[in-house]
Image (cartoon, rainbow, N blue to C red; front, side):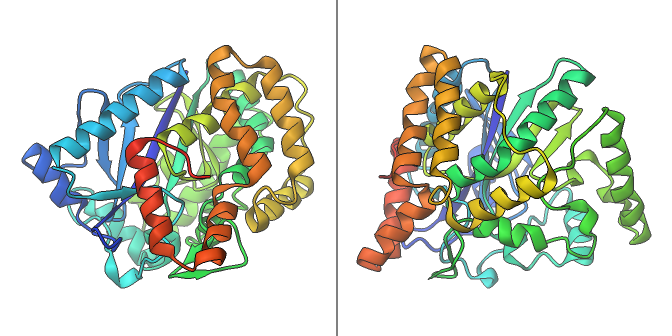
Length: 367
């Protein structure tokens, strides 16, 4: 079983971020609340008020079913709001001025106020990050350890394929994945919380509790006990015992639901591959991770092609339909590479953002 979570920025028709998630939630439901459900999806607030989260109403063993739930929900959302808002994916809003947004100031205010006091939320690593999160269920404690350790080795390659944040405050940078660059520093006051983003391997399930306890001890020293919850771990892969799944958090949000489903299908396949043979030592993983953040797929083509071939061999017919998109990402580049190429040709970021908006609304791909 797999479940996904998708974070989209809310924009006006000039692509200025609109910190109005609370207003939209009230418009649809009649009251401000953290989360509500339409027929096929749940919609919830995020830390940033210009971002809103969509997720399928339930996990599924079928990627096609997840896509249908999400896209039906997307169309329902636009219908209920009279197409008044431009939603957009990508790992960061390319033009966001931090003064143009705010963090959630309703229920759970104590949590966000504590984050702000300890870490200062007014930074891109908090207010300008959007990811696709993929939740993979586990059947036992041993299965959790196996899946955690296997997915850990996959993260750099998933980052290479999904990097979609090449621009910050209207300027291209030297990184394909700026979201992770900023994310790595957002809790520098307690480095243990984010670690190196790539998680440590687990020998046994209790190792994970030991890791959490170290974070909790440091939080308590800063009188931040309210943050002592399993979700505080900010590595790129965490365990969610309340959901009985491992949650992959390292990937930038993509341009459309279909693109998100393609990466989910790849993950589903790779979990079943017995001989991935990816680097599992910390030094080796971090080396590939740095390459992925900097240049996306560009300098990892042979490795990505090898992974793709192994996924293809084990894929179901349904999964192969989605893996076509992964092939194209390897062939033509991740979204950051595509955006950078388009921007260097035309110097028109608003045109690119409009294309990203249409990709999400119409569930199509950007090439």
